[in-house]
Length: 134
Image: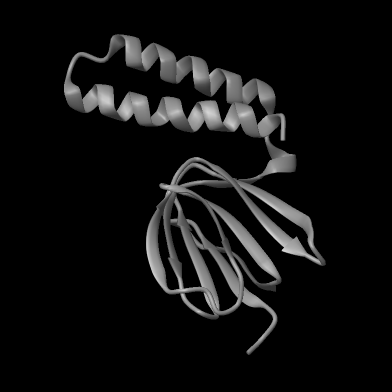
């Protein structure tokens, strides 16, 4: 068995990253999970948060994702992300503006559908602001 796992990060527009990694930690819908070679296959949701990529037991890359899905097999972890930004490229002012816009949208929401969409964006914006401190 290989000592690496293929990690692929895909956005709606394109393949953002495809590389062999020692381990990847993904913010799953039920909690963070780490993927090593030989992982049990699974399909799960991804919540807003940070994906950490490890080499030599150290985080070498951190990527903020708004959400999506992850498919894991024994040799591969593919994350289909709605939006992905390298943590070192996040801008606190933009994140805080996004948070304010989401808060305003939630306060103005009149239908259940609009309220659910605003709550989802609010969770993403809160996670993005938190990621700025990571």
